[in-house]
Length: 226
Image 1 (cartoon, one colour):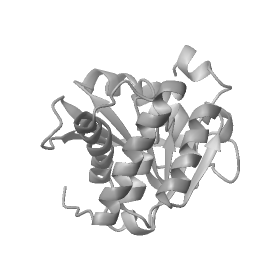
Image 2: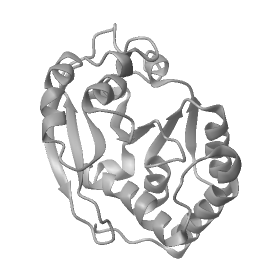
Image 3: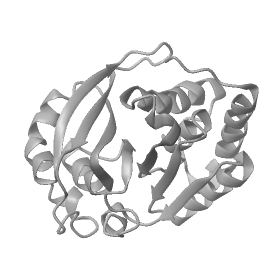
Image 4: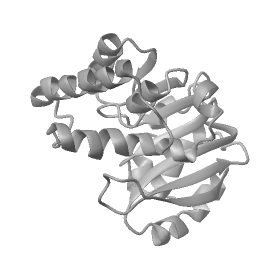
């Protein structure tokens, strides 16, 4: 993918892995715990998000990871691109405690927020403030559009990681994307050595402000997708 990791960065990924395994029994972060699988299924997969970002943005842009969970994809991207201004949003307190632990042991600057995206997207500090909004395994494109586009600044990009054939899912979400101020920019096939499944990045461009009524209250986007 055109990136080179230093020994310091490789050690950060090693520490990250050990933290995941150490916390996993009590926090249930992931079912994938073998070193080789974590490197590919989680770390490498997370880094593919950079394929949807211009090289200049990786050094100076602002990224928010919506539904960060174990810190994916936000933490691997922060390790690989230390200058990337990174915010992690996660609704589960135990998981945000883990994310704050990562911040300390990796010695990286991360803004960790505990809360639902539906609520935090109405916070003036976060609404329409980010160059890039990343999301991994959060929901269908209609749901994801409502949760992510409100965080994206005009001209910014939502980068959704998807597996399998997403054509029908993307087509069914076009009305929601448009209503929320977005436009489908590209569906980018991801072909990287080490990743077995068919993967893609769905890129949405923010072309107009998201109406103030969105996102709707917590739980509604998933129950009643636009």
